[in-house]
Image (cartoon, rainbow, N blue to C red; front, side):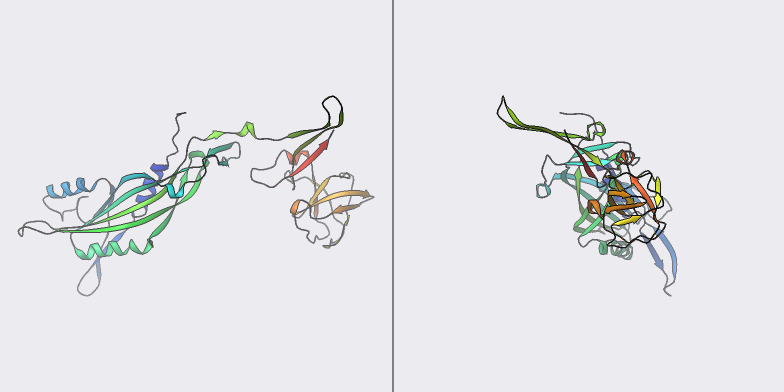
Length: 331
């Protein structure tokens, strides 16, 4: 039941959440409303109490070190199952690796809610308001964050980040020597999906189906036949041009004049532009065809258009996710 796998979903979500707040800046202006300083607010991962303890031990909050205010910190605080987003357990997801070499299978993911807490520390109230106003407009109350999951599959999912509530605290009690710290706490929920192990199913893809029909009694079969189907390409993949058209082809034309029909045989498929055609018969260099096969749309074609022959070589090159037809054989 239990096998090692690590899809880095939680880790990717934590990194993605932190990146949302990584470029926030504040400005300080003089009495003439001219900007005399611009500060990028530092962001770090860690619990709120850690930074509060550090600030209380720092003698001078204004000296140029990383603990000066303003700054922000965030942490991953909770993980709970979300039954409202549950889907069927047995449905599977099929993906192809980016290089096209392997096909991977994964069962439907399990929905979980990740809790995050973003804490903002400032000394000045205006600094706090500048930071908060750069965050809140993006959450209404959701913000969609795109994150790459599933390692080598590079599956991209949109995660809803919901702003749940905002807490405010102003620590300004005591004598004049007491340092002031404005603290805003923003709580978020990220609606993620956790995937299980990924299985390589490259060698288990069904490429041929055979069905046997038997009618009659056990000892006397009145009808016995076998029907076999294999995937058939509905467009050209290898780029081999067998001939060209010698006249413009209208939408209603079913006779295609070509330069040479020597490379084409009857009862096969050809591909012109983005239209697939079935060759019914050949008379000299004229092809009698059925237009718009396998849900392709009949198109107009100009004289000199390339004609491709769909062969077994194209069948072997059908790409993952492409539409395809079937070649049936009765024996």
